[in-house]
Image (cartoon, rainbow, N blue to C red; front, side, top):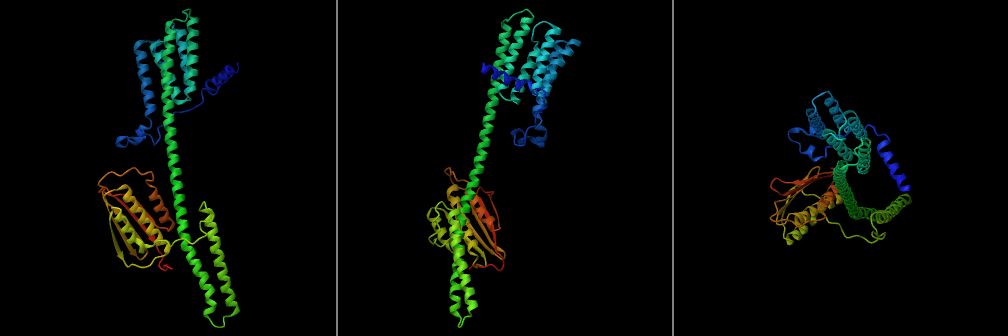
Length: 420
C-alpha cells in the first residue's frame, strides 16, 4: 500500500504539479561540438538547431495530416497534431497533456479509431521530446497513463481491448525505453567529462602547491643564509671598534637577537606549514644551485643522451640568489621535459643578461621517435610558471613551427639589486 501511495505521489509531482510551468528549451552551449565546428561563422545560428528540428518535424507532420484529410475537419485535426509538438519547446509536461487531450477530442469528435496516423506520430514524438527534456522516470509515468487512456477509450467505444491497443502500447514502451536509455548514457558521459575536468583542475592545483612547497624549501636556504650573515655581523661589529659605546653595543645585540629569533621562527613555520615532517628544517640544507652550476647540469643531460648547447649573451654578472635559483630550476625542468617528451631531439639553452634582468630561452627540435607516455605531462610547465610569477616575470611555453618546443622566460632584476 505504501509503495502504491509513493508511486501515486511521484506521478502527481511530475505530471500534475506545475504541469504547464514555463521551461523553455535552452540553445546549445558554446562547448557543444556542433557550435564549435560550425563552418562559415554559423555558430550563433547552429545553437538553435534543436528548435529548428522540432519546428521542421512539426511542419512535416502537419502537412502530412492535412494532405490525408484536405478539409476543414482536417485543418482542425492538423492543429491538434501540431500545437502539442511546438509546445514541447516551452512547456514540455503541459505539451504531453495537450497531446492526450487532443487525441481524446479527436476520438470523440471524428470517431473511428483511437489513433489517426498524424495523432499517433505526434503523441509519440511529444513523449520522446518530454523524455529527453525531463527526468527519465517521466517516461514510465507517461507510458502508464497513455496505456490506461487507450484502454479507457477503447472500452468506452465498445471495441474492447483488441490487439491494436497492446501493439501501440508496446511501440510506445520500446521507443520510450530506448529514448530514456540514450538520455541516461548522455548524462553519464557528461558527468564523467565533468569529473575528469574537476580531477584535472585538482591535479593542477596540487601540482602548483607541491611546486610552491619546493620553492619555499629552496628559498628557506637563501633567506636563512642572509639572516645568518646579519646575526654574525651584528655579533662581530662591537669587537671591530675600540671603546664601543654601550648604546651601540646594545643595539647590535638587539639586532643579533632579532635575527636569530627570526631565523628560528622561519625554520619552525616553514617546517610545519610546508612539510609533513616538522623537523625537516632543523638541520641546514645543502647549498642551492646557481647559474654557475649550469655546465654541470648540461654535462649531466649530455651523459643521458641529449645533445645540448649553451649560449650566453650580455654582460655576465652575479644575480640575486632567488633569481639564479629559479633560473637554474627552469632550465633543469625544461631539459628534463626534452628528455622525457622529445627523445632524440637537440636542445639549446640561451641566457641573456640585460639591464632589467635575465632572459631565458630553452628550445628543442623535433624528436626522432615517439616518446613514452608520461603521467606528469604539463606539470613541469606549471612549476616553471609558478617560479616566474613569484619573481614578477613573464613566460611562454609553446610548440615551434618545426615540431619542437620552446620555453621563453624573463626574470626581472631591479637596477640596485645584486647578489649577496
